[in-house]
Length: 171
Image (cartoon, rainbow, N blue to C red):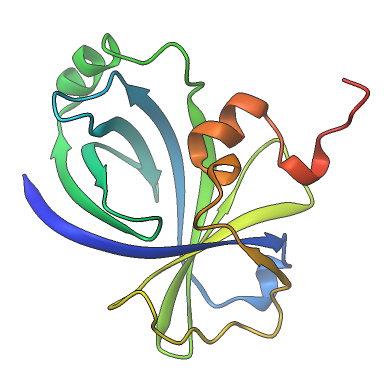
């Protein structure tokens, strides 16, 4: 299993017109959280569909800071995926999203679009160091940095089935 340090910033954005982005990849993701690991690591499996091909990954993350994580990720077989699903964390809803990867100013952005929102998306960028300068595409309306806001984690968004901005007090 590959072990890496992931430095990533997350931003709440108004869902942009995808035709204005230089989209390189479109990836369908079904992400299921598993029960915590022995070192309290966050564990998950993903079913990923890209260009008609299906593959599966297993990931463990240990959060070092809001933007830095130790990440171990490996590709797994369909059978291993099914077995790991038996360890799913029932308190976390599965996350369904479409990820659009695009380049802008020598940066690779990932835009996650969720089926429950036509208005908002989460845009992520992996960095070389936490304070790295970020150049945002002009066609993307960045509302705020949500790297340190647990309400915008995949697990929280999936459980709420909405962005906090869309939550209605009448529910």
